[in-house]
Image (tube, rainbow, N blue to C red; front, side, top):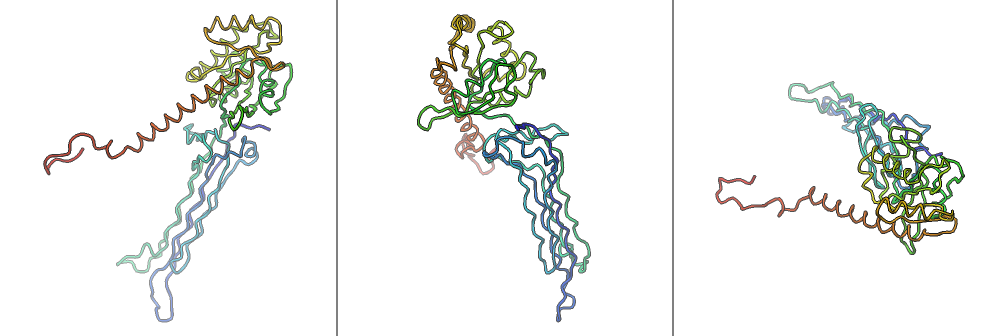
Length: 365
């Protein structure tokens, strides 16, 4: 079962209470306070793990509570800190505070982490409260309570390329032909209800991840059909491979169907329409498919591929074009990260621009 959205209650562990204790030895009857501090409570941490593929393992465990810290001991012995409680999720998961709605972290890459329930600090032992006027304090810190909240985990599939198109356009068949993925395939709409991922080999070690995404219909940006369940997965793809069925079962115009999907992408999230796109007319084995391709190419004023998952026609060209665009996108992302790092960690020469002060009274800005 594929699960891409869950709500969880998380609570960090409480801090351990401080100890009230006094040193008592044979020749030191009034040795003073020696109560130790309590240990810190454990935190609840969400970590992106590449070995996780969806949120199904979290579906039947709604409450996550970290352990509390141990209380302080005598002889200034501090209580042990509690271990953190780890929740593993797939990369591409967003973590939000359910009630406030604010984004806590977007866990994009393997190993990304976010603390969702911070553990409480341990309380101070009575030694901490000793003073010149209070040599036998009986005060102690009870320990802080751990942070608690409801969080929403939402998975947006991360793939290099995503197959989009109206239901029954041939996306699942194409994925099974280009990779070893085995999605459900049938001749009726909405066979694919959850994303399917496949690895497309380009020869040698060169590969890219291809996602077969649920079919889209008009009104999806308002939640019609699979609506947002589909669109949020498209957000994570670098390149869109848009499949257009030449002869839809409902006898609609394939050119109009193409523009309908582009409209839904635009209404949901404008930047999605700026993703590189490879447009293909599927089912090339059908008579008249090439005429539909020519019409669409004239309408768009750029190359449109004609492909067939049955005969293999055009598949190599589509894979090659997609791989080229993916490589370009990765290079842009790499340069953007380098630019961000330079801004966050400027060099000394970048910070000290302009002349040095000429007199002792002048100071650097």
